[in-house]
Each structure stands twice: as C-alpha cells, then as structure tokens.
Amino acid sequence: MSEVKISAELRSEFGKGAARRIRRDDKVPGVLYGHGSDPIHLTLPGHDLLLALRTPNVLLALDIEGKKELAIPKAAQRDPLKGFLEHVDLLLVKRGEKVTVEVPVHAEGELAPGGNLLEHVLNALPVEAEATHIPESFTVSVEGLEAGASVHAKDVKLPKGVSLAVEEDAVVLQVLAAQAEEPAAEAEAGEAGEAAATEGAEA
Image (cartoon, rainbow, N blue to C red; front, top):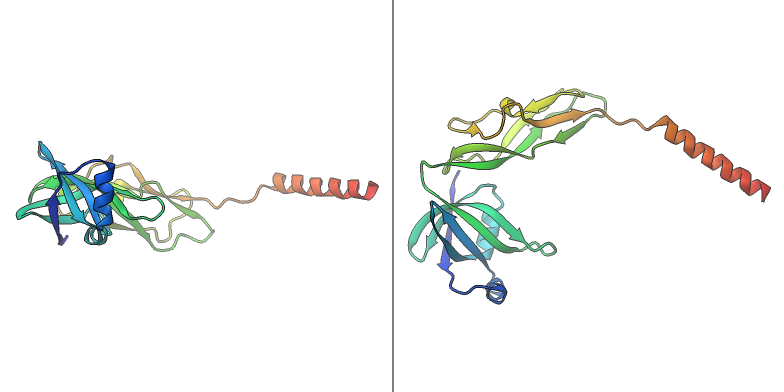
C-alpha cells in the first residue's frame, strides 16, 4: 500500500467552539495515539484527509511540524447530513509492526440460476498485517454458488504476511434461497377483496 503524505499541526485549542473554528478553515481536528504515548492532538487538512480516507486502512505519512510519523485511521466522525469530516482518530504505527485491521470483502461472479440472494455476513474481514502492507480489499468468487452455500474466513485467499484475526469457520458470505410469496397471504388478500365487493353490492 502506498503512503499518503499529510501535513498536520499541533492543536492547543479544545472544545466545540475551537472545533467549529477549525472546520470553518476546512481543517479537521484529530487525535494520534498508540505505543503507550500520550495522545497528540492535531489539526489536519480537510480536503486532503477526505481524499485519503477513501482508501480503507490508508497509511498516512504525517508531517507534524517537521516530525515524521506513520499512522492509520481508526475512527472517523462525519456530519450525518453534509458528510464532511468532524473528527478523526489515528493510530500510530511503525514499519514492520503488525496491526489488526478490518479489510473490505468484495464478491465477484454470478450465483447459480434461481434468483437466490447473496448475504454479506461480514462486510470486512478482521486480519493481522504488517502496518505498511495492509491489503486494500479481498475479492471472493461466488461463481455458481447455490442456496445454502457459504464462504468462510478460511476460504479467503490472503496475501503473504497476512493472517486471520477471526475464527477460520466464521461465515463471510452466504447464499440465501429466493423467497417465494406465501400462497396463504395471497388467499387471504383474495378473500378480503371478495368480502369488500360483497359488502359494496349489499350497500
């Protein structure tokens, strides 16, 4: 995974008022923590950070007023209506260090005929990977799978150096049978319609 360079500033103002002022300048308040050190409060460029976070588990090469650090995003708070970033939590990492992250799972291929449905039980697979080599996503083939079939964590092909951080038998994807309409419900609807027509005729 390539690194995304982000320039950051140390933040000395706190509270809602300070956060609003930071966001007015198209910047985002954030906290960098990890390795047992005290949290570092930062101000980060809003547009650059928003673009970077489009990549899950992106590796950020931070320049904090001249000090270089590596980090990955752990949590991002967004405005529920407008979608802009309100706050971000970053985890300090080092080259060669193993971290546990959740990597998105994508399905490809066509299910067996019959109108069956594919359920994503896990949208992201927990894995342990080297901090500078976190996969962006995993692609799983569901070609020809029939109702009742499942894809387990152990079935997902992992790159070298990446290991599961979840039970091997954990279900990632499963195929559900197409739901047929219940005849009883249709019959009840028909009877209700007939009753209404009869009442209308009597009236």
